[in-house]
Image 1 (cartoon, rainbow, N blue to C red):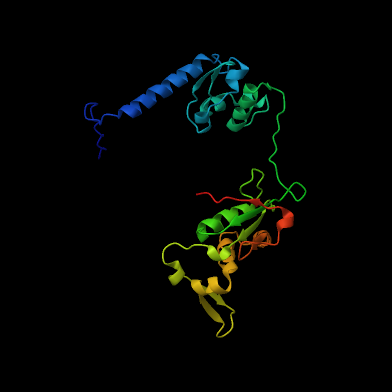
Image 2: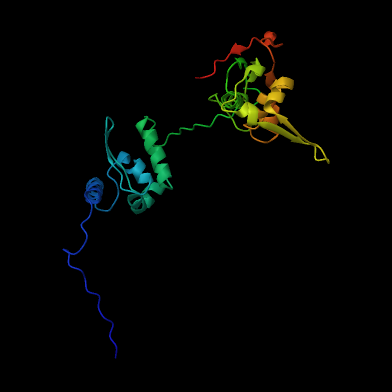
Length: 263
């Protein structure tokens, strides 16, 4: 009868030594577990409400929680393992998961206490709450790409704290001196604008210099359009872009605010 050869265990001296960082992490985790056990009763129930309903960020990630020293007293961060042991105790207080434990702990720290409700809803802008403004930008010696990126952000409203992706929270932008914009490198000689009507012979290629001479507004409009999302909302926001060759414009009645391009 053939017998299976037993594996020979390597002596402890032959094992690779653990790194100092690994050993220190093990010691910290062991100390955290001792701190948690020291603040729980023999049956596994936490001593106090603060101890039971406090969890640290490391606890949310599944590790042992850290001990927090604060003005409200000593609070012990719970790990997911400790939460599983006390699941019945937590559920009796309406807590179903570790994230709820963290939420209730936050309420306790700001003074709400158990049994109270603290609801914070996310603000969503709509047509009634939006108050669009008007800005005017001088495009003299401004790089086209940097100007387009800034203008696209203003048209979408991403510079506002109440920005809502599905709502038009942007502002109006008036750009003057569009013929004085600047390209980096040799783009005035190398860059071309191409259009195609989808008919035979309907392809047109216009060099950048020719575009600046004939339609300087199209240089900025196309650059901004290509930095906007594709969809009905972005197309509507693009209509709030007003482009003018020269130093004057026809929107003085709106009292536009001068916008300085960041350096």
